[in-house]
Length: 485
Image (cartoon, rainbow, N blue to C red; front, side, top):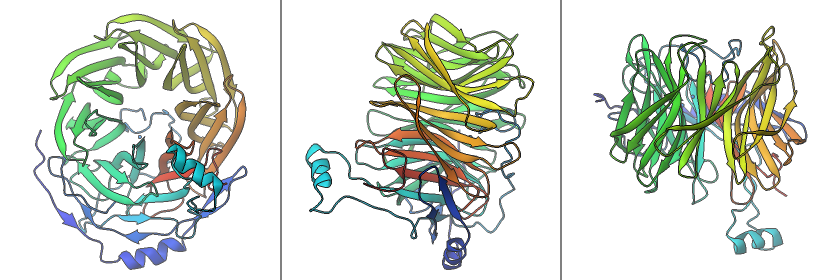
Protein backbone atom coordinates (compact mmCIF):
# COMPACT_ATOMS: atom_id res chain seq x y z
CA UNK A 1 0.00 0.00 0.00
CA UNK A 2 1.35 3.42 -0.86
CA UNK A 3 0.38 6.83 0.43
CA UNK A 4 1.23 9.46 -2.15
CA UNK A 5 1.00 12.79 -0.31
CA UNK A 6 2.75 14.56 2.54
CA UNK A 7 2.08 18.10 3.58
CA UNK A 8 2.57 20.39 6.54
CA UNK A 9 0.09 22.96 7.72
CA UNK A 10 -0.07 25.56 10.48
CA UNK A 11 -3.00 27.41 11.93
CA UNK A 12 -2.29 31.17 11.82
CA UNK A 13 -5.03 31.80 14.39
CA UNK A 14 -3.52 29.72 17.18
CA UNK A 15 -3.57 32.61 19.65
CA UNK A 16 -7.21 33.35 18.83
CA UNK A 17 -8.10 29.68 19.33
CA UNK A 18 -6.56 29.88 22.78
CA UNK A 19 -8.70 32.82 23.79
CA UNK A 20 -11.88 31.26 22.42
CA UNK A 21 -11.33 27.83 23.95
CA UNK A 22 -10.46 29.14 27.39
CA UNK A 23 -13.89 30.73 27.64
CA UNK A 24 -15.81 27.98 25.89
CA UNK A 25 -16.77 25.41 28.47
CA UNK A 26 -15.69 23.33 31.43
CA UNK A 27 -15.76 19.66 32.21
CA UNK A 28 -18.26 18.87 34.94
CA UNK A 29 -16.90 16.08 37.11
CA UNK A 30 -19.55 14.64 39.40
CA UNK A 31 -19.58 12.03 42.14
CA UNK A 32 -16.94 13.59 44.44
CA UNK A 33 -14.80 14.96 41.58
CA UNK A 34 -13.71 18.56 41.12
CA UNK A 35 -14.78 20.68 38.14
CA UNK A 36 -12.13 21.15 35.46
CA UNK A 37 -11.62 23.97 32.94
CA UNK A 38 -9.61 23.57 29.74
CA UNK A 39 -7.70 26.00 27.56
CA UNK A 40 -5.90 25.45 24.29
CA UNK A 41 -2.63 26.29 22.65
CA UNK A 42 -1.83 26.31 18.96
CA UNK A 43 0.40 23.57 17.55
CA UNK A 44 1.92 22.57 14.25
CA UNK A 45 0.90 19.40 12.47
CA UNK A 46 1.95 17.08 9.68
CA UNK A 47 -0.05 15.07 7.22
CA UNK A 48 0.81 11.45 6.37
CA UNK A 49 2.84 9.87 3.65
CA UNK A 50 3.28 6.13 3.88
CA UNK A 51 2.41 6.51 7.52
CA UNK A 52 5.63 8.25 8.45
CA UNK A 53 6.00 11.95 9.12
CA UNK A 54 8.59 13.92 10.99
CA UNK A 55 7.94 14.23 14.70
CA UNK A 56 5.78 17.23 15.47
CA UNK A 57 4.30 18.90 18.50
CA UNK A 58 0.77 18.66 17.21
CA UNK A 59 -2.23 16.89 17.91
CA UNK A 60 -7.50 13.42 16.26
CA UNK A 61 -11.28 8.79 17.18
CA UNK A 62 -14.39 4.14 17.64
CA UNK A 63 -17.11 0.57 17.76
CA UNK A 64 -19.13 -1.64 15.63
CA UNK A 65 -21.29 -0.80 12.69
CA UNK A 66 -20.64 -1.27 9.03
CA UNK A 67 -21.14 2.42 8.45
CA UNK A 68 -18.95 3.55 11.35
CA UNK A 69 -16.29 1.13 12.62
CA UNK A 70 -15.63 3.39 15.58
CA UNK A 71 -18.78 2.48 17.52
CA UNK A 72 -18.01 -0.71 19.45
CA UNK A 73 -20.98 -0.18 21.68
CA UNK A 74 -23.30 -0.67 18.73
CA UNK A 75 -25.53 2.08 20.11
CA UNK A 76 -27.53 3.52 17.19
CA UNK A 77 -28.76 6.46 19.25
CA UNK A 78 -25.48 7.74 20.64
CA UNK A 79 -26.11 11.18 19.19
CA UNK A 80 -22.46 11.91 18.38
CA UNK A 81 -21.73 14.94 16.19
CA UNK A 82 -21.64 13.94 12.55
CA UNK A 83 -18.44 14.08 10.54
CA UNK A 84 -17.99 16.69 7.88
CA UNK A 85 -15.69 16.80 4.88
CA UNK A 86 -12.33 18.44 5.66
CA UNK A 87 -11.95 21.99 4.41
CA UNK A 88 -9.25 23.05 1.96
CA UNK A 89 -7.75 25.49 4.44
CA UNK A 90 -5.68 22.76 6.12
CA UNK A 91 -6.25 23.82 9.75
CA UNK A 92 -3.50 23.02 12.19
CA UNK A 93 -4.35 20.97 15.25
CA UNK A 94 -4.51 22.64 18.62
CA UNK A 95 -3.79 20.96 21.91
CA UNK A 96 -6.09 21.95 24.73
CA UNK A 97 -4.51 21.70 28.15
CA UNK A 98 -5.96 22.54 31.49
CA UNK A 99 -4.14 25.74 32.35
CA UNK A 100 -7.00 26.45 34.70
CA UNK A 101 -7.07 22.90 36.05
CA UNK A 102 -5.08 21.30 38.84
CA UNK A 103 -2.00 19.52 37.58
CA UNK A 104 -0.54 18.47 40.88
CA UNK A 105 2.50 16.45 41.75
CA UNK A 106 3.99 15.19 44.99
CA UNK A 107 7.51 16.17 44.00
CA UNK A 108 8.08 18.34 47.10
CA UNK A 109 11.14 17.09 48.99
CA UNK A 110 9.29 17.66 52.25
CA UNK A 111 6.49 15.33 51.22
CA UNK A 112 7.07 11.92 52.74
CA UNK A 113 4.69 10.23 50.29
CA UNK A 114 6.68 11.62 47.37
CA UNK A 115 9.92 10.32 48.93
CA UNK A 116 8.32 6.89 49.24
CA UNK A 117 7.30 6.96 45.58
CA UNK A 118 10.84 7.87 44.55
CA UNK A 119 12.39 5.13 46.66
CA UNK A 120 10.12 2.47 45.18
CA UNK A 121 10.45 3.68 41.62
CA UNK A 122 6.74 4.55 41.40
CA UNK A 123 5.55 7.57 39.46
CA UNK A 124 4.64 10.69 41.45
CA UNK A 125 0.97 11.56 41.53
CA UNK A 126 0.11 13.66 38.49
CA UNK A 127 -3.44 14.51 37.45
CA UNK A 128 -4.65 16.27 34.33
CA UNK A 129 -7.61 16.67 32.00
CA UNK A 130 -6.58 17.51 28.42
CA UNK A 131 -8.01 17.47 24.92
CA UNK A 132 -6.28 17.10 21.57
CA UNK A 133 -7.78 18.13 18.27
CA UNK A 134 -8.76 20.81 15.79
CA UNK A 135 -11.94 22.09 14.18
CA UNK A 136 -13.45 18.79 13.02
CA UNK A 137 -13.54 15.35 14.71
CA UNK A 138 -10.64 13.68 16.47
CA UNK A 139 -11.21 10.39 18.31
CA UNK A 140 -9.15 8.83 21.09
CA UNK A 141 -9.83 5.09 21.04
CA UNK A 142 -6.83 3.41 22.65
CA UNK A 143 -4.15 4.25 25.20
CA UNK A 144 -0.92 2.53 26.15
CA UNK A 145 1.15 3.40 29.24
CA UNK A 146 4.91 3.44 28.60
CA UNK A 147 7.84 2.59 30.85
CA UNK A 148 9.01 6.20 31.09
CA UNK A 149 5.67 7.27 32.58
CA UNK A 150 4.27 8.69 29.35
CA UNK A 151 1.60 7.42 26.99
CA UNK A 152 0.66 6.88 23.42
CA UNK A 153 -2.92 7.33 22.29
CA UNK A 154 -4.39 6.19 19.00
CA UNK A 155 -7.57 6.81 17.08
CA UNK A 156 -8.49 8.81 14.01
CA UNK A 157 -8.21 12.39 12.80
CA UNK A 158 -10.53 14.29 10.47
CA UNK A 159 -9.04 17.78 10.67
CA UNK A 160 -5.79 17.01 8.84
CA UNK A 161 -4.59 14.21 6.61
CA UNK A 162 -5.32 12.73 3.24
CA UNK A 163 -8.83 11.38 3.58
CA UNK A 164 -12.10 11.70 5.43
CA UNK A 165 -10.32 10.31 8.50
CA UNK A 166 -6.70 9.22 8.88
CA UNK A 167 -5.29 6.82 11.47
CA UNK A 168 -3.62 8.79 14.25
CA UNK A 169 -0.90 8.07 16.82
CA UNK A 170 0.14 10.64 19.45
CA UNK A 171 3.01 10.36 21.95
CA UNK A 172 2.38 12.14 25.28
CA UNK A 173 4.60 12.98 28.23
CA UNK A 174 3.58 11.94 31.77
CA UNK A 175 1.94 15.37 32.10
CA UNK A 176 0.02 15.01 28.84
CA UNK A 177 2.20 17.24 26.66
CA UNK A 178 2.40 16.22 22.99
CA UNK A 179 5.89 14.97 22.14
CA UNK A 180 5.11 13.86 18.58
CA UNK A 181 2.31 12.58 16.42
CA UNK A 182 1.94 10.58 13.23
CA UNK A 183 -0.86 10.24 10.70
CA UNK A 184 -1.31 7.21 8.43
CA UNK A 185 -3.84 7.14 5.67
CA UNK A 186 -5.15 7.22 2.14
CA UNK A 187 -7.73 9.42 0.41
CA UNK A 188 -10.38 7.11 1.90
CA UNK A 189 -11.16 6.59 5.64
CA UNK A 190 -8.95 4.93 8.26
CA UNK A 191 -9.43 4.29 11.96
CA UNK A 192 -7.41 2.76 14.82
CA UNK A 193 -9.21 0.71 17.47
CA UNK A 194 -6.36 -0.84 19.50
CA UNK A 195 -2.64 -0.56 20.16
CA UNK A 196 0.04 -2.85 21.60
CA UNK A 197 3.74 -2.33 22.22
CA UNK A 198 6.17 -4.56 20.36
CA UNK A 199 9.21 -6.03 22.15
CA UNK A 200 11.51 -3.56 20.34
CA UNK A 201 9.62 -0.61 21.80
CA UNK A 202 7.67 0.10 18.63
CA UNK A 203 3.91 -0.04 18.29
CA UNK A 204 1.32 -2.22 16.58
CA UNK A 205 -1.92 -0.51 15.58
CA UNK A 206 -5.07 -2.22 14.33
CA UNK A 207 -8.29 -0.87 12.93
CA UNK A 208 -9.97 -0.42 9.57
CA UNK A 209 -9.27 1.00 6.14
CA UNK A 210 -11.33 1.37 2.99
CA UNK A 211 -9.75 -0.49 0.11
CA UNK A 212 -12.95 -0.27 -1.90
CA UNK A 213 -15.69 2.34 -1.87
CA UNK A 214 -18.17 -0.15 -0.44
CA UNK A 215 -15.98 -2.23 1.86
CA UNK A 216 -14.11 -1.96 5.14
CA UNK A 217 -11.04 -4.11 5.69
CA UNK A 218 -9.04 -4.59 8.81
CA UNK A 219 -5.69 -2.87 8.89
CA UNK A 220 -2.54 -3.70 10.88
CA UNK A 221 0.42 -1.28 11.13
CA UNK A 222 3.81 -1.79 12.74
CA UNK A 223 5.96 1.23 13.67
CA UNK A 224 9.30 1.88 15.29
CA UNK A 225 9.45 3.60 18.72
CA UNK A 226 9.22 7.00 17.01
CA UNK A 227 6.03 6.14 15.16
CA UNK A 228 7.68 5.69 11.74
CA UNK A 229 5.85 3.08 9.71
CA UNK A 230 7.73 -0.21 9.20
CA UNK A 231 4.96 -2.15 7.46
CA UNK A 232 1.23 -2.41 7.12
CA UNK A 233 -1.03 -5.32 6.18
CA UNK A 234 -4.63 -5.49 5.02
CA UNK A 235 -6.93 -8.43 5.65
CA UNK A 236 -10.04 -8.55 3.48
CA UNK A 237 -12.91 -10.98 3.15
CA UNK A 238 -15.75 -10.68 0.67
CA UNK A 239 -17.62 -8.42 3.08
CA UNK A 240 -16.79 -5.86 5.76
CA UNK A 241 -14.03 -6.59 8.29
CA UNK A 242 -13.23 -4.74 11.52
CA UNK A 243 -10.05 -5.30 13.61
CA UNK A 244 -10.63 -4.52 17.29
CA UNK A 245 -7.78 -6.06 19.32
CA UNK A 246 -4.09 -6.99 19.06
CA UNK A 247 -1.33 -8.67 21.05
CA UNK A 248 2.38 -8.65 20.19
CA UNK A 249 5.24 -10.97 21.12
CA UNK A 250 8.81 -11.73 20.03
CA UNK A 251 7.82 -13.54 16.84
CA UNK A 252 4.92 -11.45 15.57
CA UNK A 253 1.46 -10.05 16.21
CA UNK A 254 -2.02 -11.54 16.45
CA UNK A 255 -5.10 -9.54 15.53
CA UNK A 256 -8.74 -10.23 16.43
CA UNK A 257 -11.95 -8.76 15.13
CA UNK A 258 -15.06 -9.25 13.04
CA UNK A 259 -14.89 -10.64 9.52
CA UNK A 260 -17.43 -11.31 6.78
CA UNK A 261 -19.90 -8.78 8.13
CA UNK A 262 -22.70 -7.92 5.72
CA UNK A 263 -24.91 -5.97 8.11
CA UNK A 264 -26.16 -5.96 11.68
CA UNK A 265 -26.84 -9.55 12.65
CA UNK A 266 -24.05 -11.22 10.69
CA UNK A 267 -20.31 -11.76 10.88
CA UNK A 268 -17.76 -14.13 12.38
CA UNK A 269 -14.95 -13.74 14.90
CA UNK A 270 -11.57 -13.82 13.19
CA UNK A 271 -7.92 -14.19 14.20
CA UNK A 272 -4.97 -13.38 11.94
CA UNK A 273 -1.33 -13.99 12.80
CA UNK A 274 1.52 -11.98 11.21
CA UNK A 275 5.27 -12.43 11.54
CA UNK A 276 7.56 -9.53 12.39
CA UNK A 277 7.78 -8.56 8.71
CA UNK A 278 4.02 -8.30 8.29
CA UNK A 279 3.61 -11.57 6.41
CA UNK A 280 0.47 -13.55 7.24
CA UNK A 281 1.26 -16.80 9.05
CA UNK A 282 -2.27 -18.14 9.60
CA UNK A 283 -5.88 -17.08 9.92
CA UNK A 284 -8.86 -18.57 11.70
CA UNK A 285 -12.59 -17.88 11.86
CA UNK A 286 -15.08 -18.93 14.54
CA UNK A 287 -18.82 -19.18 14.12
CA UNK A 288 -20.98 -19.53 11.04
CA UNK A 289 -22.82 -17.39 8.53
CA UNK A 290 -26.20 -18.00 10.14
CA UNK A 291 -25.85 -15.74 13.17
CA UNK A 292 -23.85 -12.86 14.58
CA UNK A 293 -20.42 -13.59 16.04
CA UNK A 294 -18.51 -10.42 16.89
CA UNK A 295 -14.99 -10.34 18.37
CA UNK A 296 -13.92 -7.31 20.39
CA UNK A 297 -11.25 -8.41 22.88
CA UNK A 298 -8.12 -10.59 22.78
CA UNK A 299 -5.60 -11.78 25.36
CA UNK A 300 -2.63 -14.12 25.09
CA UNK A 301 -2.72 -16.93 27.65
CA UNK A 302 -0.68 -20.13 28.15
CA UNK A 303 0.79 -20.12 24.67
CA UNK A 304 -2.57 -19.51 23.01
CA UNK A 305 -5.34 -16.95 22.94
CA UNK A 306 -8.74 -16.09 24.33
CA UNK A 307 -11.17 -13.98 22.31
CA UNK A 308 -14.35 -12.42 23.68
CA UNK A 309 -17.35 -11.01 21.89
CA UNK A 310 -20.91 -11.94 21.05
CA UNK A 311 -22.54 -15.00 19.52
CA UNK A 312 -26.29 -15.61 19.20
CA UNK A 313 -26.77 -12.40 21.24
CA UNK A 314 -24.86 -13.75 24.24
CA UNK A 315 -21.39 -13.13 25.67
CA UNK A 316 -19.05 -15.55 23.91
CA UNK A 317 -15.55 -16.64 24.96
CA UNK A 318 -13.34 -18.68 22.60
CA UNK A 319 -10.10 -20.30 23.81
CA UNK A 320 -7.48 -21.36 21.22
CA UNK A 321 -4.01 -22.84 21.00
CA UNK A 322 -1.02 -20.98 19.57
CA UNK A 323 -2.16 -21.64 15.99
CA UNK A 324 -5.64 -20.31 16.60
CA UNK A 325 -7.25 -23.77 16.67
CA UNK A 326 -10.27 -23.67 18.95
CA UNK A 327 -9.87 -25.59 22.21
CA UNK A 328 -13.24 -24.69 23.71
CA UNK A 329 -15.88 -21.99 23.74
CA UNK A 330 -18.45 -20.86 26.28
CA UNK A 331 -21.46 -18.57 26.08
CA UNK A 332 -23.10 -16.65 28.91
CA UNK A 333 -26.53 -15.05 29.12
CA UNK A 334 -28.75 -13.42 31.70
CA UNK A 335 -32.03 -14.47 30.09
CA UNK A 336 -33.36 -15.48 26.71
CA UNK A 337 -34.85 -12.03 26.16
CA UNK A 338 -31.62 -10.18 26.96
CA UNK A 339 -29.02 -9.21 24.35
CA UNK A 340 -25.47 -9.27 25.78
CA UNK A 341 -22.37 -7.90 24.04
CA UNK A 342 -18.90 -8.51 25.54
CA UNK A 343 -16.56 -5.61 24.77
CA UNK A 344 -13.48 -6.39 26.88
CA UNK A 345 -11.67 -9.29 28.51
CA UNK A 346 -8.86 -9.77 31.03
CA UNK A 347 -6.94 -12.93 31.86
CA UNK A 348 -6.59 -13.80 35.56
CA UNK A 349 -4.34 -16.39 37.22
CA UNK A 350 -7.30 -18.76 37.54
CA UNK A 351 -9.62 -17.71 34.74
CA UNK A 352 -11.08 -14.72 32.94
CA UNK A 353 -13.30 -11.70 33.45
CA UNK A 354 -15.49 -10.27 30.68
CA UNK A 355 -17.47 -7.07 30.64
CA UNK A 356 -19.97 -5.54 28.26
CA UNK A 357 -23.57 -4.48 28.17
CA UNK A 358 -26.85 -6.33 28.57
CA UNK A 359 -30.10 -4.94 27.18
CA UNK A 360 -33.67 -6.12 26.88
CA UNK A 361 -34.30 -6.80 23.20
CA UNK A 362 -37.59 -4.91 23.45
CA UNK A 363 -35.81 -1.73 24.58
CA UNK A 364 -32.25 -1.48 23.29
CA UNK A 365 -31.99 2.12 24.52
CA UNK A 366 -31.69 0.82 28.07
CA UNK A 367 -28.71 -1.32 29.01
CA UNK A 368 -26.73 -2.29 32.09
CA UNK A 369 -23.09 -3.09 32.77
CA UNK A 370 -22.50 -6.82 33.02
CA UNK A 371 -19.36 -8.43 34.49
CA UNK A 372 -18.80 -12.19 34.21
CA UNK A 373 -16.09 -14.08 36.12
CA UNK A 374 -15.04 -17.55 34.89
CA UNK A 375 -12.60 -20.29 35.81
CA UNK A 376 -9.77 -21.40 33.51
CA UNK A 377 -12.13 -23.63 31.52
CA UNK A 378 -14.64 -20.85 30.95
CA UNK A 379 -17.23 -22.03 33.48
CA UNK A 380 -19.00 -19.08 35.07
CA UNK A 381 -18.11 -18.51 38.72
CA UNK A 382 -20.24 -15.41 39.27
CA UNK A 383 -21.74 -12.46 37.46
CA UNK A 384 -22.99 -9.03 38.47
CA UNK A 385 -24.95 -6.25 36.77
CA UNK A 386 -24.74 -2.54 37.51
CA UNK A 387 -27.43 -0.08 36.45
CA UNK A 388 -26.06 3.46 36.50
CA UNK A 389 -28.44 5.14 34.04
CA UNK A 390 -30.70 4.36 31.10
CA UNK A 391 -27.88 3.35 28.77
CA UNK A 392 -24.56 2.14 30.21
CA UNK A 393 -21.75 1.08 27.87
CA UNK A 394 -18.61 -0.40 29.46
CA UNK A 395 -15.84 -0.30 26.86
CA UNK A 396 -12.70 -1.24 28.83
CA UNK A 397 -11.83 -3.48 31.78
CA UNK A 398 -8.64 -3.76 33.82
CA UNK A 399 -7.78 -5.78 36.91
CA UNK A 400 -5.78 -4.50 39.86
CA UNK A 401 -5.10 -5.57 43.43
CA UNK A 402 -8.31 -4.04 44.78
CA UNK A 403 -10.47 -5.60 42.06
CA UNK A 404 -11.58 -4.22 38.69
CA UNK A 405 -11.89 -0.86 36.98
CA UNK A 406 -14.29 -0.22 34.08
CA UNK A 407 -14.55 2.80 31.83
CA UNK A 408 -17.06 3.67 29.14
CA UNK A 409 -20.01 6.01 29.05
CA UNK A 410 -23.44 6.36 30.54
CA UNK A 411 -26.45 8.51 29.72
CA UNK A 412 -30.11 9.07 30.32
CA UNK A 413 -32.35 8.53 27.31
CA UNK A 414 -32.34 11.76 25.33
CA UNK A 415 -29.49 13.36 27.31
CA UNK A 416 -25.79 13.65 26.44
CA UNK A 417 -23.48 10.83 27.42
CA UNK A 418 -20.83 11.25 30.13
CA UNK A 419 -17.54 9.43 30.47
CA UNK A 420 -17.89 6.86 33.25
CA UNK A 421 -15.24 5.34 35.52
CA UNK A 422 -16.20 2.60 37.99
CA UNK A 423 -14.18 0.62 40.54
CA UNK A 424 -15.34 -2.83 41.71
CA UNK A 425 -13.98 -5.16 44.35
CA UNK A 426 -12.81 -8.69 43.59
CA UNK A 427 -16.39 -9.99 43.80
CA UNK A 428 -17.76 -7.35 41.45
CA UNK A 429 -19.35 -5.11 44.08
CA UNK A 430 -19.25 -1.40 43.32
CA UNK A 431 -16.65 0.58 45.30
CA UNK A 432 -17.12 3.97 43.63
CA UNK A 433 -18.25 5.51 40.36
CA UNK A 434 -17.17 8.79 38.76
CA UNK A 435 -18.75 10.70 35.91
CA UNK A 436 -16.94 13.30 33.79
CA UNK A 437 -18.47 15.49 31.15
CA UNK A 438 -20.26 18.63 30.15
CA UNK A 439 -23.29 19.72 28.16
CA UNK A 440 -22.50 17.61 25.09
CA UNK A 441 -21.59 13.96 24.45
CA UNK A 442 -18.45 12.67 26.20
CA UNK A 443 -17.20 9.09 25.88
CA UNK A 444 -14.65 6.84 27.60
CA UNK A 445 -12.88 4.20 25.53
CA UNK A 446 -9.95 2.67 27.45
CA UNK A 447 -8.41 2.81 30.91
CA UNK A 448 -4.91 1.78 32.08
CA UNK A 449 -3.37 1.58 35.53
CA UNK A 450 -0.01 3.27 36.13
CA UNK A 451 2.84 2.18 38.39
CA UNK A 452 1.66 4.23 41.36
CA UNK A 453 -1.95 3.13 41.05
CA UNK A 454 -3.02 6.25 39.14
CA UNK A 455 -5.43 5.73 36.26
CA UNK A 456 -5.31 7.13 32.72
CA UNK A 457 -8.40 7.16 30.50
CA UNK A 458 -8.72 8.01 26.83
CA UNK A 459 -11.94 8.91 25.06
CA UNK A 460 -13.49 11.78 23.17
CA UNK A 461 -15.42 14.87 24.13
CA UNK A 462 -17.78 17.30 22.45
CA UNK A 463 -18.18 19.42 25.59
CA UNK A 464 -14.85 21.20 25.23
CA UNK A 465 -11.79 21.40 23.05
CA UNK A 466 -11.14 22.89 19.64
CA UNK A 467 -13.56 21.04 17.39
CA UNK A 468 -16.73 18.98 17.07
CA UNK A 469 -15.16 16.06 18.91
CA UNK A 470 -11.68 16.07 20.42
CA UNK A 471 -9.57 13.22 21.76
CA UNK A 472 -9.66 13.39 25.56
CA UNK A 473 -7.20 12.08 28.15
CA UNK A 474 -7.78 12.13 31.89
CA UNK A 475 -5.10 11.17 34.38
CA UNK A 476 -6.58 10.62 37.85
CA UNK A 477 -5.44 9.37 41.20
CA UNK A 478 -6.18 5.77 42.19
CA UNK A 479 -9.70 6.76 43.27
CA UNK A 480 -10.58 8.35 39.95
CA UNK A 481 -10.22 11.91 41.26
CA UNK A 482 -8.50 14.77 39.46
CA UNK A 483 -6.56 15.68 42.59
CA UNK A 484 -3.52 14.29 44.41
CA UNK A 485 -3.40 13.36 48.10
